[in-house]
Picture (cartoon, rainbow, N blue to C red):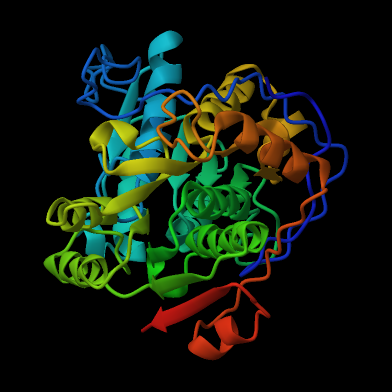
Length: 401
């Protein structure tokens, strides 16, 4: 269970300086039970699958809304995890709900996102959950003009209006993705893989993907030192700017597998589908999933670097409906990590054999206690020189631009 405690005021890399928060306690009553999350589970549907994506409100109003930024709603990752948290809360508490995908899909503009948010407001939304860092400009516009509507900015930060006044109807919720990335990189090397890959979304401009990737490199380095092995990593943001599946990405990853890469961290929404297609064209290609447990998609998935999307969305909605917006949420920033069970690897679907659950739990506890410190300072621009300057001794990174 999450416990009530002061939240971190630390600045995330890539990033914006967090507004100073006074005594903020996030009453997160959630257990990070990392269950199977994707449709197609061989035994039964999970609790999110059975909740319909489309419901009809008796009065034509939909008070809980989710507006995506780019990519597919059912991306088997970030957007889907956020949506499942929102519809689960709504279903459990008798609230109407609806999702909105901006026009132009993966090529959506700020105006497209503004239009989608305005449509949600017109349809009676009381609280709008907006996953993705690209939402910032649209949020400033729509939240400024609709002070009575609340906005939950997932992977976001506190916002201000055009005059610099804090938008107290917006709460930012972000995660320490570097921790999940670290666990994944460490696990891969301890399992015996020495030829790794990373493909990320956002073209190198997405802070969350960047934190995942940098943590992955650090985890691989830590495990490689422990095992005294040399590790290579192909690292790229090509073909991931819109977080979409593409033939170009599949071709790139197929080339990696065919030249020796053993496991690829697929870090970016529907990009997972392209990596999976590439892996399926090889004999032994493996995948690391992201955001939610993607193991039910394929036996190719050895683990997933997860964060508590569903649970944190449900918790924030619970606080809003519990009358705690002004006290706990408005204008604030929450950064959730391993110390609140919001980052990690799923243990319920563990398939690795050389690296055990007990060993993982010991590693997890070292991160929580601060015995292991993970750097968060990602660059604003990626290049080979940055990786070469990290001082890695057992990991060699090939940056592919």
